[in-house]
Every structure is written in C-alpha cells, then in structure tokens.
Image 1 (cartoon, rainbow, N blue to C red):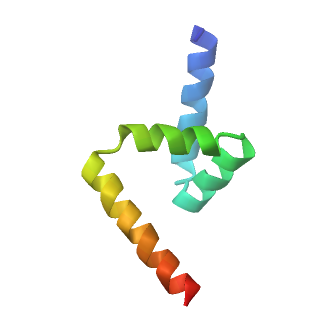
Image 2: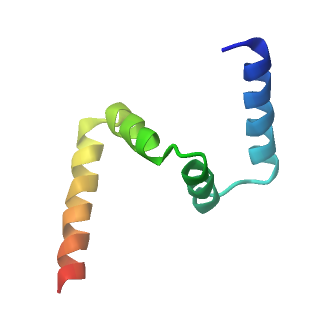
Image 3: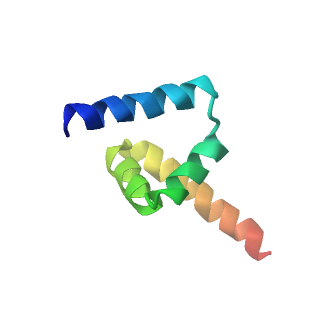
Length: 68
C-alpha cells in the first residue's frame, strides 16, 4: 500500500467513527464494495475454533426452527 492509500483508508475509518456506524450499516457498506465473501472468509479463519463451533450450533438450531 502506498502512503496515500493508507491515508485515505484512515480517513474512511475516521468518517465511520464520526457517524458511529452500526453493524447493519457496516454490513451494507461491505456488501456495496463487494467484500462479503472475503470478509466472511477472513473472519472464519481468524476466529477461535470453539467460537466457530458455537456459531455453527446456533445456525443448526436456527435452521431447525425455520423448517418447522
């Protein structure tokens, strides 16, 4: 990354902090820049295994409820 690129990234981060961006808005931004799949992949690879297992259990329970 160039210095200019890094500066712009920090400007965007500062703007997001100024508006107190919430989770739904951040998800919308990630989708609009076409990074949903990449973000999911990164989060999965960085998450602790026990946390992933808990989330998967939650997904399974949610799907059971939706199917009934």
